[in-house]
Image 1 (cartoon, rainbow, N blue to C red):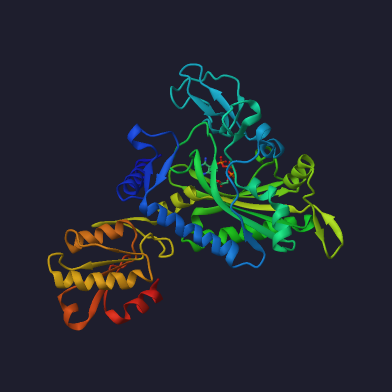
Image 2 (cartoon, rainbow, N blue to C red):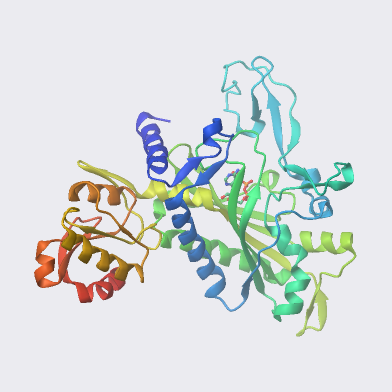
Length: 434
Ligand code: ATP
């Protein structure tokens, strides 16, 4: 990483910690590898992303429903899905310094990233699933796993959804939830972690329409990322070669982002999972997971198109894209749909009760409509700086004139332009802007 890119990463890590977006997991015990906590502003930002995804994937479509399945599942699920045998990465160990790496992530030179030597053990398959036990007895029979993807919860509920929701092919089941992967090496902040939230859609379709639907979802997902403000130049598709596809996939295309710390890398994956999962679970459970097609009067096992994106990676891409520096300030140029707070309200001076009183009433009024924050610390310049740094699109200031003319100043984060508006029109004006 060159110096500029390295300092961008450092600045972002430090800003997100300092301003309550992201904290290292278990920090007071010196952390835990590849685990992060969302702070108060991080949870707002991520919740906005989840709402936007849900709106786009579920609410705005007639044929997609939601689901929230359990993280822990019967271990048969993971045997049948192929994850016990196949959800592995190739692990090698440096014989000199005993550092462990994913073989496919070694540099082209194959020198050890820790000590520089080139003396590796044979590669072995390392399963990424975290094991746990159900109940008080720890035997092989009680063993299960933390889910590495939410998709299996959707497949095992396929018949439940078909029976209860009167869905007709093609239709989708969407889910947002935690996934866990015991990655061999973590790093690059939120890019590769061991616990992360994912947003997954399993879109069930006719086998002969699968390829067309695959193309459709590829485009839909790319358009969605663009709608969040990610730049076209920083996004591209990359088709997987036959040897890198997951065990269940007939075709996979990544939507890649041009990460400042490593160049192009996966942001979202779109896969054609065929009828692999439904067929495997049908056979293994003995329950019929086929679908009766009214038109052809035949039972078919649908194919599945799956767009799947991690919220941490998405948040990281958005933070990189929005991080801006000008002479006097650092600001996050976040879309107002994503910013944790939409509006901040200040009294010009904190020690003037009449200003504080009016500012509080403006704040309470605005807060009914938008996520808002009140701030009366320090001077006005510092407050602007502080709100810019967390990406608040508008700051509203109550000053001495406000007491006479019932107007306030509205300042725009990006242009820093200030407008005077009537308090009674404020909410309507903000509504138009936000
Ligand atoms: P990679 O090749 O980077 O390991 P993958 O191909 O295993 O990723 P998928 O199985 O397609 O990833 O997972 C779907 C999405 O979940 C990814 O596009 C990514 O956004 C996110 N994701 C996967 N693994 C991680 C991780 N370890 N940390 C953070 N996000 C992840």
